[in-house]
Amino acid sequence: MRFQKISTYLHSADLLFVGFNLILSCINILFANRIPYWWLIVLSNFSGSAFICLIAYARHKTGWKPLRILHDWYVPIATFFSFKALYFMIRPIHGGRDYDDFLIAIDRRLFGVDPTVWLTQFATPWLTEILQIAYALFYLLFLMLGYEFYQRHNLDLFHYFMFTCVYGFFLSYLGYFLLPAVGPRFTLHDFAALDIELPGLWLTPYLRWFVNSGESIPTGVPTSIAIGLTQRDVFPSGHTMLTLLLMYLSGKYKAKSRRFMYVVGTLLIIATVYQRYHYVIDLIAGAVFALLCIATSSRLYHRLKEKYQTIESGFEEGSL
Image (tube, rainbow, N blue to C red):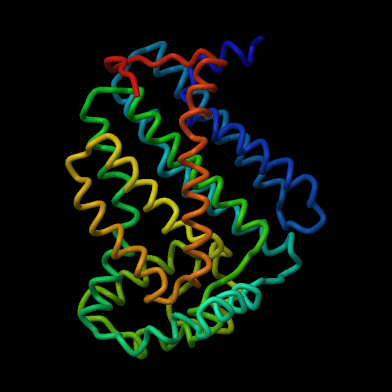
């Protein structure tokens, strides 16, 4: 009964985060003998869930605008922290084993070549620059489309957008847990020589540094060390999956930025292979996961709202 009352202050993405934190905590406890400092992850999950409940309650009780903004926009930061939590779990659980050889074999069976190696013949600095910029824009596309929906003053639409994105990320984590891999830039190419083998023009080295930093890879390390440090986030391609979701949502709800989403999204998906981040089978899996998310997110969103009678205030209530 008490959870039922607290849950009425949570929007659907809140419920996803609280539930996901609980699942991650259970996994950490189950594999406590393999995961170093598992208890810190459990503690951070509990603290994160408590923070979400606190700001949700305070937002609706006080009506204070900064709290409303914080409650609506904490999601991107929380998603990043949930992504980094996997960093400390996946490799220890699998005993350090990666499945790149399996993914490489599938690509070779499908195409007869390694696609990232084959694409090298078309590489030019200007093409590399354009595609690296598109790849890095992945992180801004969510904010751009989310802000456009936010400006419509339809809280239901905005929360559905946030819910679908978070739900999509969490679905992709299933693949990371099942088939951890590091990607072709480490296995089929020399990661440390990437800027020499695939140079851009001006921004490419800085954007690569930005992407590498998000995956816990320090600057200037050799390939052998980088492989041990990087995130296991290859299968499915989260960039492909979530970009397809953004393109779908921008079209369905007639966003003004939808043409921009289509163009940049297409370039971004091409960049995942051209820039050697992913195998093609990762993109195929990302598309399948995107279809699964699209097919189930609306029903799950409305079911959570109905079951927990989520309060939506601060904007005009709208329908999807």
